[in-house]
Amino acid sequence: MERFSDIVDAVNELPADDQFALAQLLKQRLAARERSEIVKDVAEAKEEYQVEGLKPQSASSIMEEFRDDA
Image 1 (cartoon, rainbow, N blue to C red):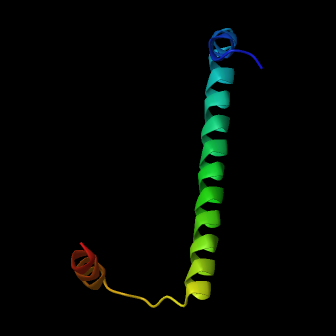
Image 2: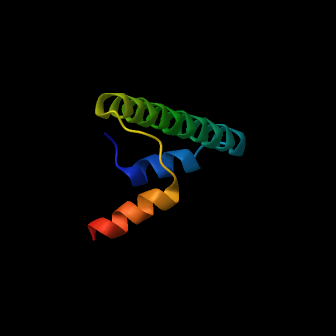
C-alpha cells in the first residue's frame, strides 16, 4: 500500500474538478460506513434488549440507579 503522503501528492497532481469529485466520493463512502456502523450498533442493542429482557427506563431512573450503586 502506498504511503499517505504519496497518495496526497498524487491527488495534488489531479485537475481541480477531479480533486473535488474524489473529495465528494470519499465523503459519501465515509457517510455510508458510518450508517452501516449505526445499523450494526442498533441491531446489537435490539438483540441485547431482547435477550437480556431489559425494560425501558427514564433517564432519571437510570441516574438514580447509578447513584445507588456508587
